[in-house]
Length: 260
Image (cartoon, rainbow, N blue to C red; front, side):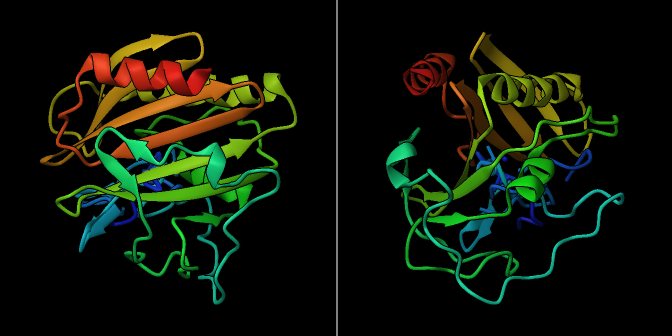
């Protein structure tokens, strides 16, 4: 989803959902990693998890997915901090369009790690669609392709029994082609990241089909499990700080369910 100093894409950061290698978010939904991602698509994001946490320290921040990133890439100014709570819906997107359980993480309101949103009493909040989609994308130092812009975006926050964060970022687009274009570009960025070593952001692709991608991200010592799912004119980014505990079968099963 980019990691919001997540401690903070998570997001994403997140996200799912959620920047170590660049920008990227749950999926806070605005994903970008920092040492510790902010509470996990974005993502939702959520983006890259914050290095250290794709969003929650208390709990640890998760990446904006996504889902949010801890720090936006240098070529774009960060948006001003919101002063009012965002609605719990965005366009035609609502809580019923998002999963309430993600790999052992439950939909739950979570305090923002860096004031990136004002709590509204629920586990979802509307975010600026263009900004969230941009922040969620992991870049790993590579120039991101031109992205399709969503018409609406809804971020979601998750927690597990240990207080670890997760992020979701659900985006709707003008049509199925636009959604497919964004998801394809996003997956391409993930595949272009280092798959091993000590880079700020490391990705581990595990499985993928035409409509979805499943893998893990590493931000320093932390491991996040993530999904990128395209269903009709929507794209969902999910990322959870589970230390990479979800296996391929679990990720595949959830991805296929969400892809319809």
